[in-house]
Image (cartoon, rainbow, N blue to C red; front, side, top):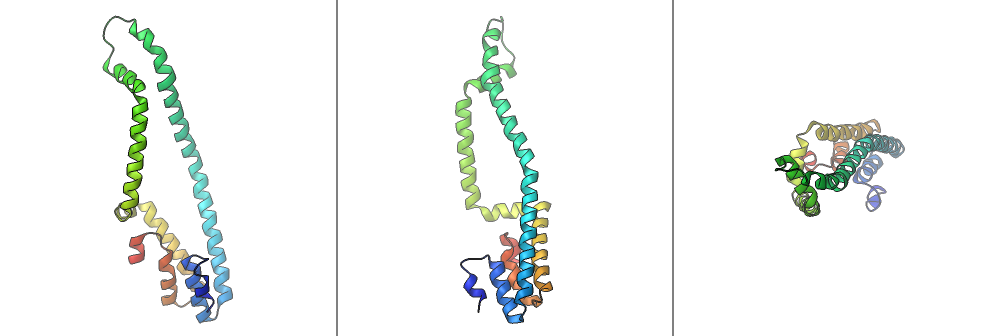
Length: 178
């Protein structure tokens, strides 16, 4: 039994696929299919990561520009506007207040992000339930499930063992439960 000995070193898909292939007598074909599957998966992940680079760059650049405006540009206008006789508009006063207390705001945002990360970690099932309703996540899970099942079936693994081997591949808890 070669399959169970792989438990500590390979993902559940590989372990269960190899076990099924050993029983069906087509280990070579299933290993070839697994190699193709993981190559396609790596290619898709690379494309997704490459597609996310530009939006992340734009977000970071925007945050840097806004920070520079709040810390550099706004304070330079403060002495000029202080010389004007009369009260400044509400929005202007709010922006000056923001630039004066931005240190506290940044600390509050970081603290909020840490609390949100803790909440997400504790309530992963709730978050999964919310996210699975979104088309993208459901579609991605479905595609991964079908690709994996198809690879096993084309490799000659019978349907029920192939389904049993494919279920652990699903990353979402609700997909694994059916």
